[in-house]
Length: 323
Image (tube, rainbow, N blue to C red; front, top):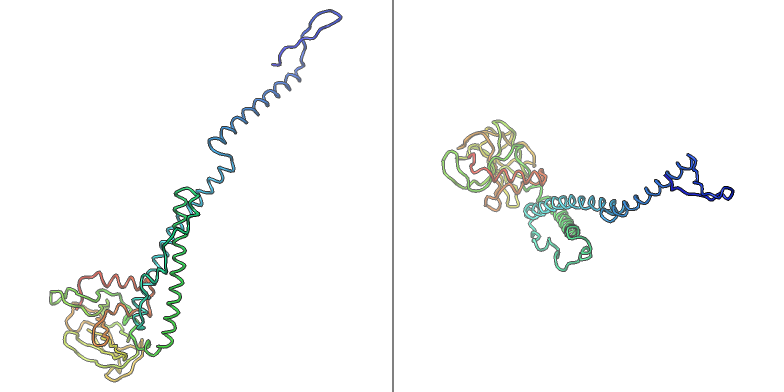
């Protein structure tokens, strides 16, 4: 209620109370409440700004958190891309450059001068977590850019070498002899028939009897017939010091005989279980300059890097061979 006021009546020489109309009382009360509300709101906003920040500060904090989360996701993607780039570099050195007879690029060369002074110290103005993440991201992106540039130059070099050596590359064994999965790899393996470990100088591909076997490169049939523990065997001379062998066949393709010229992908025989074996499969060898080498390195023409790594893993896992 409004405070009581009085006025002096000169006629009656008395102080009389001021009478307020109902409407005036309502206006006065409402004004007082609005004024109190404004004061309390001001106090509340001041306190909230002190402890939680202004609306713009709160929005900025939420934005910073979202950016930090996105940086964390970006970091995991960079790690994945770097692994994929490392796999490409490994295939480049172990497969393409080996086959083309050129020197591999060393690890130090691929780093391309990474490291050294802290060139990202400008991020130190941020909080420790943010600064560390920003430095890591910027540094690794810069490193990846250099590695990608080196890999691009390497592929250009390989492309030029390929153009100069097309005849040789057509003869080099470079595809799978059969569409089956590798079940045993190159190296010391337990022989299922002889029951002891011995060098396994080729790859064993899973197959049923009668599946098609294909030549892995251009060449000339050197041998087709029975050969001791190999059973039915085909040898192909690919020139340039390369020879391939396809063992334990059930039959030879029509016209396959010594002296016949063939092309990569030509049908030469059918899988079987002839010779000393545990069961039907294809045993495949590559001989280079008279010595057996690991054929897994020569499956690059029809395998992606991911497939190649999967085949290599399968080849290494099985401690036993099929022959």
